Image (cartoon, rainbow, N blue to C red; front, side):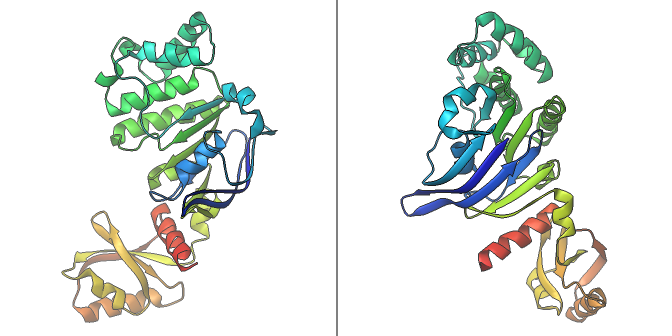
Length: 303
């Protein structure tokens, strides 16, 4: 569905995307995950034909991006920031967007009603876009991206800044669209959303560091994780305990990254006891996607 080979893009002295290879299969929910400034938006815009790469090739639906004018009706793009018209109603925005693709007004109306039912916006079709909540604005943007009935959806951080409940609703919609046959490329800064993808690519400093399913990425994690609860006046002392490779806050707890060898956990617990740290509980847990991505980001820094 999407093939990218050797793609690079620079803006002046800043290299936003570096020699990226990417392959998104039909009917995947492919997640592009990485920190702010990693190159996610630049990569997506190049795939959509909105930015010309310096080097590399992009293929959509088996055709070169040189045919983007013929391909664009089968491609739905949702930019990172809400880009519709606040002084137009929900339906007026949809009519405007559909007209850009030369769709008949009757066809737009029919499709809009179907999609607005799906996104639970049907009762707000006459409301001004500026009067919608953040989550509803994102649903409107998705509705506009779907009005051409594309097979491929490219969504740039579609739930950024949206409340958790609206994020859940949005992802339910994406799963339903995927079951109906849509291929979805989505970028996200949220690790819980990365877990929902069938495959993910971690991008940092313009490079793809690793690509795999969430489950396999966690299987490949080379360390062990201890979850620590306790009163720590100086968390940095944990890093001096033999066997502890890294430590960071994780909600109201600490995650300790430790060496993967027999007896390491016991040595860490003993070492913590010698520091005088008051431990409420400590246990080994499976690595989370956040643990994996912290490790990948540090690996990229070393490279």
